[in-house]
Image 1: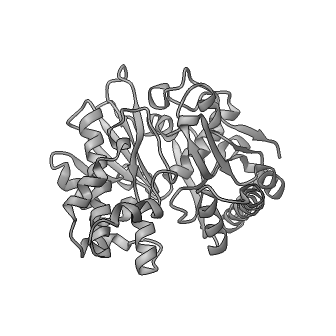
Image 2: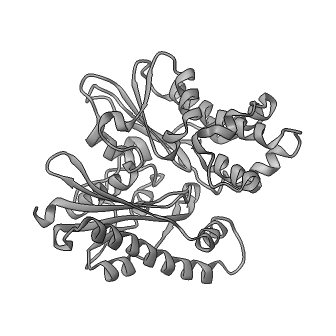
Length: 368
């Protein structure tokens, strides 16, 4: 296999559930060659969470976390290469999303950390990162970026499709079968972020496995209706969001006036994710007959998947596993693709998704 055949994508999302690394080839279709997941140590995770909210001594903390994450990202990549017996000479580049600590499209800035200098130095492989800010410089939201990848890999000439990524946030991509129709994509709101924060706080578990805890509770309709009134849910795309809006302190303030039990809050949060996704589809997707493919950690939440199917009874809801790409590795594969686009001098954004003035080559290159 030639050096130009393999790209590595690295993703650490807002859910902070681990670092996903995927080795991918494109000759000519996408092939997932190898994958690796690396846990984020608890102290580092706590520091990242601290950085997502305003506080004191942020610059020093950001500097140290930037370095620590760069080392951990490099370790994850080297582990993948070693465990799978890959030859570094086969790998053209690494596409590292980095760890988002701020995403403020209303102020035209976004910040991802995880020093790419360290990644390139420790792996000996050209590393590409900072994919979002060029789109923002062109007037875009800087997110979501995966719809351009979805368009390349998943568009069907026969069927309208929706790709729904449920990570910390939930974002959808609408892929119309007719090529003359534009791709649509945006963040619908919280995916797992509130459910994960709540179950960690009350059950000391990093996530609600299969949605079992939520399923044992009951949705509190008055609380749900209050949450659904949040202005973000009623904004038209292009739009994107993050932990700046949806975090545990904010959630606690919303829940405080109610006497809802913790398990019923969890059930309500699951319903919030499901309803905001479906409301967004019903409001902004111009098709009523489509296939819905789900990826990300939320695709393994059986209770959430069941609610999505119940709310969309006339459409088939399944994971991207059914389309040949493991739902756990979709975003990592997307950033491998974005790295490839950058080196080829090709655009990585969709103006119909981000609202940018034009298509742009995304990413900053750190040579090996």
